[in-house]
Length: 167
Image (tube, rainbow, N blue to C red; front, top):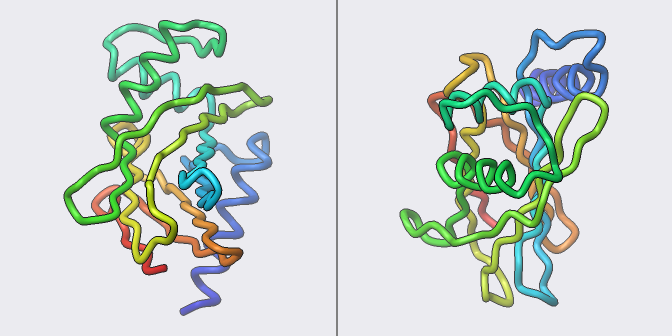
């Protein structure tokens, strides 16, 4: 079973980093790192640009073409993320976070989020990542959490959009 999961994750990574080979997969990657000095979660979320444009256009009911220099668009991205991405130390108590910004890559967009946790250590973390699941039924969101040098990964998708990390 572990090899099957590893193969799936590797296949998704290959399709994500080589979009010309296959964009039939709808995938995002979220990297979360706990910073004990600032007591924050530093989050980087990578999605395909065209998928993000489609989701935010649907969300805002306005045709969107990604532009990282647009303050209005950054607000739209933040409003969209607020409905799709959450972090909880205790079940049902979402932490507030801020969108630090975003930047374009060849066919993808990186969005950067900072989540204050105000805790020297974490026992658990609930992560919800429903980004793009309302648009693509096959959307797979890979979440990597790095805490004290140890990395755990989970796969979130429609119907199973939140997981608990025990730290």
